Image (tube, rainbow, N blue to C red; front, side, top):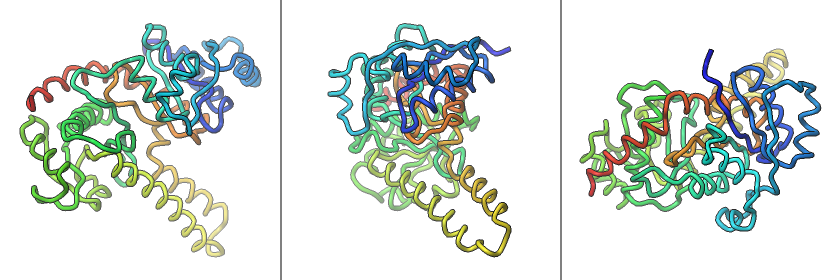
Length: 335
């Protein structure tokens, strides 16, 4: 039997909270050897938990006060809401009372809490969010996906190291190929950021294959793709929008031609294949000293359960420990 781990879940995070986080916790505690700490409003969480009528599950409620909303400034909200659910959840990891934290709430709030409470890995200036997002390239890790709008070349190099470790340990990719997302594959193509970043990667011992273009994302030419958060978030939203639009077009085209039940099944399969982030439960905050998983706000209970599996994988593969070893070594090549 796998080691019993303790995972804190922000029960107030997400559009469907506390229902989805609580139900996801129940599912995870039934199906994995995991102790769950549900952090949130005591009465609201208990009310949801009572609906499942499983009093002997390894689930404990940790009370908190308030939550960080999507529209709030993360830095300001952390100061104004010191007992918010994401801060309390993350503090449990820092204190050694939990092995990981999961939230489907504010991405900015989750990242800010991770940075302030857990701190960053040596050599990492800013943490990142990322992971596989394209259905045709499910083992391709893209970062940053939106947390760092403006980046320096050294930060993109750091993203490359973090993504490479994630690719090796969790996606089982041997010697991951790393590419810079740019407007041409030639070394001299791109803006000042991509050109300077290209030079830094050349000095490292990473498996750097040079620049890649947008069409290369579909084929998975690179296992790890680095870009600033401005570009990465456009890629993410484009992929999400294309997936939904393709489903609508397919539904219109097939309507009246095949059985409606078959259409529904086909669209469901198509959605699952292309919604890679949801199928994994979310992704880790890359570059902090602890396992912090952030998911989409529209997460269902199934998403939360998969996030618990992802957190367990991060812990069991010693993801943070390996990142902490490799990042300083690579970053020393540019100093």
